[in-house]
Image (cartoon, rainbow, N blue to C red; front, top):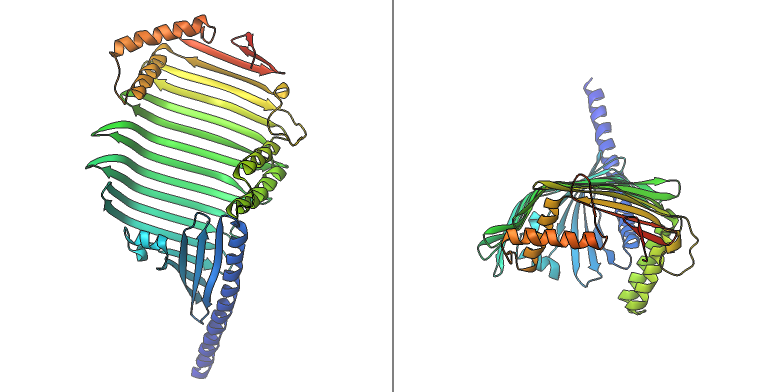
Length: 432
């Protein structure tokens, strides 16, 4: 019985050692392949080079250099541990580069540590945590707490999920807070679809404040942003939903804001061509092979190709509440399919669009008061009652010129339409 147990233990140990050795060899091959892949993906903007890889049975070490197009560089050092059930890798910033030297002034480099676990199927789980960071300079103080980054990827590194959280960030200038950011949560889910990372994302911010001296100049509460992109046939479409619960800006308060957009019809082949061309143009610009102005004209032409299959844009909802009034709007834009001629721009004869906006008296007056404060360094130039009267006079002038029409239920309306090269403002023709 003891011999049988001993033989089983020996076989188990041999299996563990052989699987660890196999994992070590496979890890090195996969690591080198990923470095080459990154070099190809970011060609023109980032140079990725494997400086050294020292393979071991249980522990391997690697150094990778990153050279940015802006001129800065970083060196990453990796400790890779091999297990029969997978790999664990710890990534740190190495000393010896200007960027690392600058970062080391505000945070110990060992705190910037990325932990990655890779299972037998090649799926990876990476985490970076920074509980607290604070540093001071002559111009002010920077404080950060509760940073957490998590990234899950499949073996191809093209499908996965990214999440980011930040408890608080504060920038203090002259002993007073300049910017405060609280409760940030970001989630993004993406999957490769014909070479494009498409999916959905969500961003939430509990509170964002920009201070003016000891008083808030602008404060946003419960900001929420949703986005989604998908592939239908050979076209890419997407939806955007943006909202916030409250906005206080220089004494004016707005609530229940929402903007919903739907975009359809972007040609996927044109997107891929644009990506490839943009990389080449960036490389040419960095090597100074071409005039920057020429590149801008070329890029404009490439963007025009995105519209060759037509475009449908819908403003599904535009809403903003103010003290005693609201603003609401909606609309759509349709551009039919047209062959790309090589000249940038849109044929206005083919464009069809409509838009409306309803504005109550009180929120129009709030906008006038806010504009006055922005023009006078945050302070009203005259008494608020005078500004309200000026807002009424301005609205009256816009009514006389036909920019506004008066609504039966009160307030004002703008209706704008465009079809076959003809524009109409509140039912009256105008020339674009």
